Length: 304
Ligand code: GH3
Ligand code: MG
Ligand code: MG
Ligand code: MG
Image 1 (cartoon, rainbow, N blue to C red):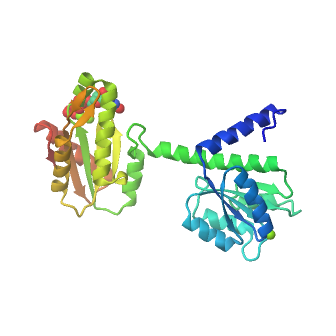
Image 2: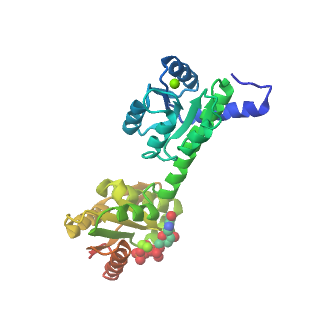
């Protein structure tokens, strides 16, 4: 329905439709001990093209959430046999943050402290039964949007915009979670300035994405990062033969051809590496020194 008599509601409906169009199949978990209420809420949600999952108690709901990280919203009743809704919220928040799933508590309780108890336990919002459909849809939409915005933010904070690879910040966080020793390599494209000068900046960008994809194909998306400009970093397994592994990658780049709108493009890379129990920053500095040596020695080579 589109309530045209009310322009703000009309705009809101358009926004909801826009959201649905761009994020079809968002999953919502409905937790209530009454199957009639689950069915009723499920129907309302399906009207908005949400995918609905149901649970008749808190324990089942927790299991479903553990097994399905794609659930974006939980609607939960309060009074249920076993775990109540407030307790369910605290349990969910032990393993799913507000950037992963939103929670709306629903209760017909006359207890005026109910909404505060839900929110203190980690719920994002609260609905008192009975509610009208428009309020229901607005709160559902707004909470799903909130989670989606947080996810977009966290992605933007972790990802390099041009190549889609992890960025510097994400790389540090993920390496520092691993126990030492670390094996790190810095990869720098040789004479990349010439690529921009001879082929143009757009093809320069295309070349950067290409080297990024060769890196993630070879070492795995989570083990590589763009550090800036035409410089990339690899986190290698300390058990691998470092020199051979990197030499194989150097050769792979040197022998590959990137077809572009301005003709075939070939590139070489220089690589500096370091391995040891030292701090990540110190290893990176050592790898950088080795990269400098590889450049000095004529480029298109590995130094460690
Ligand atoms: P060397 O072999 O010594 O590494 O030479 P180089 O030309 O690769 O290194 P230099 O540091 O002189 O130049 C790097 C160039 O990379 C300069 C800069 O314009 C370009 N660059 C940095 N970031 C981007 C980008 O996002 N897109 C494009 N197209 N070029 C970029
Ligand atoms: Mg109940
Ligand atoms: Mg370079
Ligand atoms: Mg450079």
